[in-house]
Image 1 (spheres, rainbow, N blue to C red):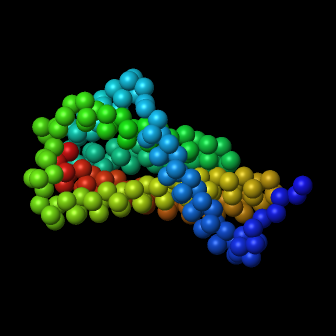
Image 2 (image 1 turned 180 degrees about the vertical axis):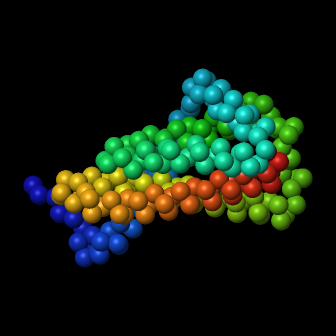
Length: 198
């Protein structure tokens, strides 16, 4: 039985197909993060996340922004590996969900942090700005990961078609784009953490 592509895919231009691919991977990545959040992490993983968070808290803002970028960029580059980049990325997305769950468990176990202001101490403007920066961080990082994972599939497809060299230009452009997005993500994440007193 031959697989048939949907009509919207067959009638789409090359650029539109890439956008469809990125959107599909974006949704898949979010679903995997949710699954990672739902599944309780191991106590060892929770401790590792707690230790990493404490290291970030005591960095100055500039070092923190650089640290966020130098952590995210190499991971994102791994997601570009032809075909293998998709499972690598989804595994990292699952770990991201586990990390969110671990942070929540640490907060619940420790109670309210003495170094972090309570929500009642935030001004309305500060709270809105922190939320905007958090959303921007999410967008910058998840768009970058979606671009990388979808490109890993396109790159594999082009290689099997004997057109790998033609795809190299797209690959280099996308690496440049995600470098910019992740750098911006590092900046806004640092600002968001600063606004909430972390």
